[in-house]
Image 1 (cartoon, rainbow, N blue to C red):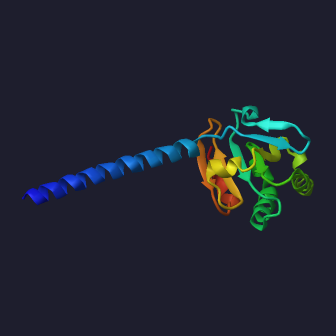
Image 2: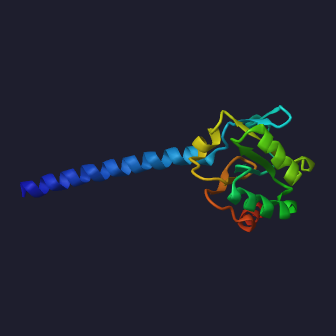
Image 3: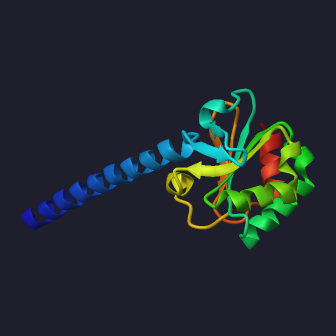
Length: 169
């Protein structure tokens, strides 16, 4: 009887500990993942663009990419084929690659003709990788105009799915 009481007490202790640990782990992920990071990036013209420069009137799409990444190029080709569907969003495309590669990317995709797109290099390097716990590129996150995370894609970004979520805002 006493052994059963001790077992129940230990089981209750470990159950409570597991629940508390899970809640803390979940809460820390939600806080980080739910908010727009306070980022800074350098544009190819040398200017600095940061989270403070974002509009609070439009949804935000953050795309963390590498210009030489095959999966990123697939995403960009699909994305720019449907660029009209993204006109109501502000788009931040950020990378860790050198400015020369970013400038070539801008030239290839003609990003300069879209006022809602900012392309640049993260400062400090790998800030976004750490913030979102990115393991592969591309990574995409969609936020509503209030800065609430709607959806993120840690692997391939299905452009039509991203458009669907953006249109629902």
